[in-house]
Length: 581
Image 1 (cartoon, rainbow, N blue to C red):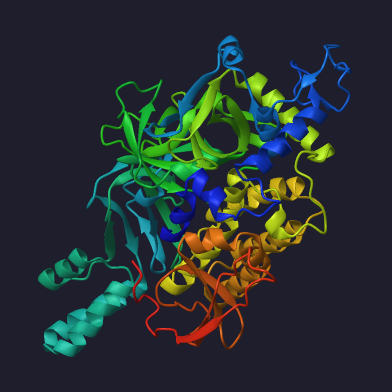
Image 2 (cartoon, rainbow, N blue to C red):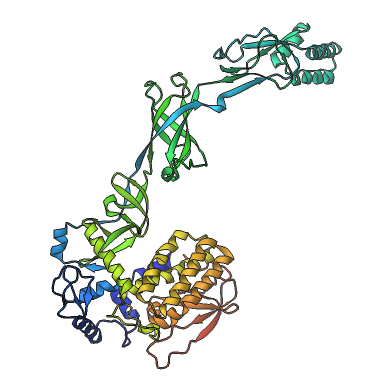
């Protein structure tokens, strides 16, 4: 997403400057300094429990009883974004160790138990094709070995004798069509090819027709005896080859996404040490056992030497997930009722909690699927005390309004106390509008996981700016993004883009228009439907069709009475990919 990177790459100074410098903005300067000093003079906190804030200069902490001290500017700033500030000496005392999130090549080994079973692909059923009596049964019991081409039994059938006579008559007459028809009749009655060739050579009827094994194996089931009368379709015996067997293993549900057909696995058979030590995943069954939360995986193993028998126990080891993944040390991931989260080091002794979505864990590292980017620094040790403080600070922020940055229902969007960090958080919603626009004009399906960071920030921003005009903007934008995660492409996605842009329109035009103008973005409106979209310069690429596009000029919030929005009509190019890299 080329457009998104432009917003995220802006420096903090540029972000502050881009918001404008109206009298109500938190920008560097004398006015901002007066605000902070005023907040310091009226707020006091406990040095051991900085989340406790009071306006009584002579008060004491209700938790530890210590005298309150004036709240510092750093404490006020940290409380604005849910972070905490920790003195350098305290960081050293707590043993805080900070590591970067990085792309690492690691995997995990999954151990499971399995049992040897017969390979159903190597099973053959011998069935009768005609009515007759079984004679000269060469196979007498289950377990007898049968080689390909070996005699199984002989059968006496009056129908087959009559069919043989017709074939001999056809041979005597030399009628090729009749010879072919009589031969086909013998084949349909179950007479094998070499028996038919013997009949043609000897010109003598075969009263007891032999039946030979077409494949080899071991007699697993014998369903007839010598002298039995059989009908067409009656099963005679079942042959099973053990040249290859299956091992059925139970794999935990969480590890199934990493298992694929063709994966080589390590095997150990306590009852057969000489058996092959490797196998290949042949099939993953589509159901989960609700009691054990495992799925059956079928592993094919070579058994030409015959060491393995059905029912034998197998110890299975699968090496999974060996490719490079974004990860952090496993001890950096904390889990509680809020889910998985980490403590992010923001610099200058400031730390904040952040929710993450984790993947596989192995060799002391845990994969991060969402919530972090490569290079961001997280706390790998000493984070429990920091997490407790961050959690208390977040809980306090939800119960008590931010008195250092007052805003109410009547506060204009341009006058909200938005600093560089907060503006970057709001920009996540604009980034999603750029991403959806790109997906529509380039014709690909959006990844729903890309929308999660913006949705995760929505709740924090709504709490921070409760009872202000920004809340309905965020609520409507979140609703559009949640719906976009479901539709993902095409006209329904275009409808959600229109809904998202309608929600963001007040913020784009009244909140921080100069920020987006200086970042090189252009706001367009479809002349027919009136739907908005935003893109990075260039010719308009209409995500709603090929209609005319109106360019909406960014208003100057410092102009008296507000600047009139000028529009100019330009035809959107027919090619949706024109000028786009």
